[in-house]
Length: 175
Image 1: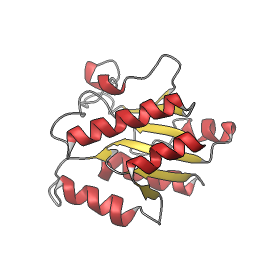
Image 2: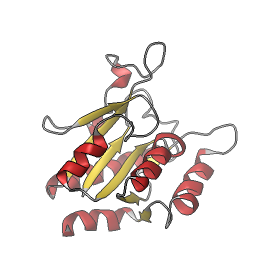
Image 3: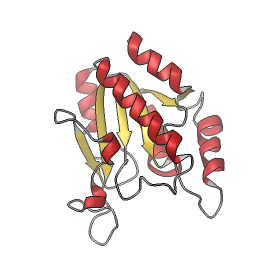
Image 4: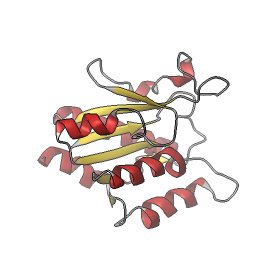
């Protein structure tokens, strides 16, 4: 089991996100419990490349301070929605024999969705703790509706096991 924290970068981790406080608190709890139970915490950052807002080397590209990686924790950088495409993450996890991934981060309807589906297609058991992903309003749905759509309808029992935060924390203790 690993905890995968996706795109929680300074530029986009802010109060415009749906249930921001609950999200921050939940992700911090997951990271803390993972570290206490020797569950590897892995981070993924998104790089838009030249001309984009999230660009390697800028302050906004770095991981949000409250989720800051420890020195020994791995960081994979990506330039597409999926954490698995051409990052080395899939190979790293398979080499270690990992089968379960707890996914948390940003944004529900973009990189989390792509990573959940790709992780599933690569044979991983994906676990999504409640309120450990979030997003902003888009032109079609509010952030709340997007969160509900993916967590309660799209992923659950199809691509992932969507469980309470408490259940995810308990799983890390029992592994």
